[in-house]
Image (cartoon, rainbow, N blue to C red; front, side, top):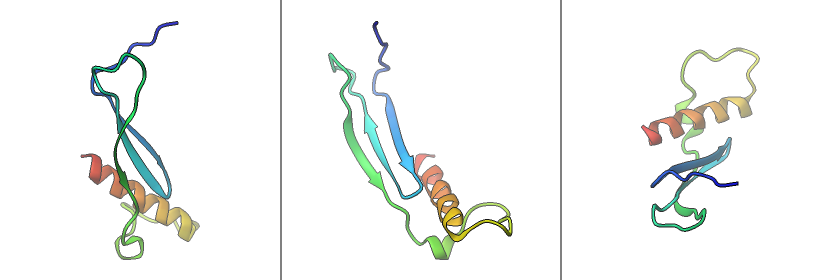
Length: 76
């Protein structure tokens, strides 16, 4: 089976506690990931998530939502 590689594809691997950025170089003969950077959550208590916060949301869920917002800002 053959896989098609997109030139200079940008890959984000993220969970609630961090994100790693990779790129696939266009000249790679096989699937190769080059590390591009890391994003860690910052100022979670100071910032807060976007939108309304449901009352049943835990502190951990709120922190994850805040980090998701920070990641979105970093990507765009």
